[in-house]
Amino acid sequence: MIKNENREAKVLAQNICMSVFKARRVIDQIRGRSYEEALMILELMPYRASYPILKLVYSAAANASHNMGLNEVDLFISKAEVNRGTIMKKLKPRARGRSYLIKKTTCHIKIFLKEKYKV
Image (cartoon, rainbow, N blue to C red):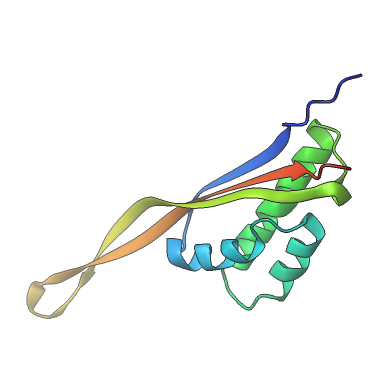
């Protein structure tokens, strides 16, 4: 049986209510690391952005083991991206009948897991 070495599990979360820069700060720490090491890093990080990313890494590993039959111990984060999403705009009432615009930024997060090559 020939195994396809280019299989990778991916997960995508859209419109997460956080800044792109805050999410990238967390993603940069786990890119290229093994699955178990990334879980340890994300659980100990003090940032609010680490919890949604932790859920995404869990989901990507579950996709890899259930859909593709890959072993979770051999997985590593091959690619991780954070892109800008839509900006939700609200108006805040101010003095003298004026209003100020409040911009709530969102982001899209993609995580790809691959199996390590065994030599």
